[in-house]
Length: 143
Image (tube, rainbow, N blue to C red; front, side, top):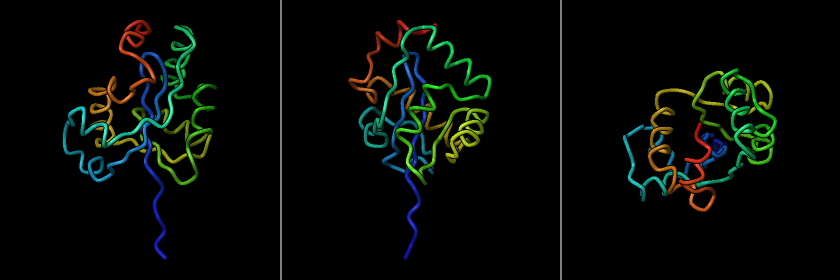
């Protein structure tokens, strides 16, 4: 019996919170085949969870933790609740990936194809987040 590899998730930080996307088109991600339009992006990534920052201070502390290569309490809660055993987490920063792996035991991936995924999500973030947050909230929380 063939063992199925766990799903791929993407951790993406916006100005207003952390988003966790499930990769629904792994072939596209593995090929890093270039930018997707809004409709294709919606087919490749589905929002699994979103944790809004409470305020600007919360956003700043989350960003500082990421830069320091540590996992904030809020991010730890989000990942514990929504990442299942065997799932891989695509992260934008290798230090953050190492901290997530060390503190939570979640396998993290960071390479050139992940950076392409992050660019595609960033380019379509408002459409992918849908009702999770609005463009005006992101602008308001931007530092």
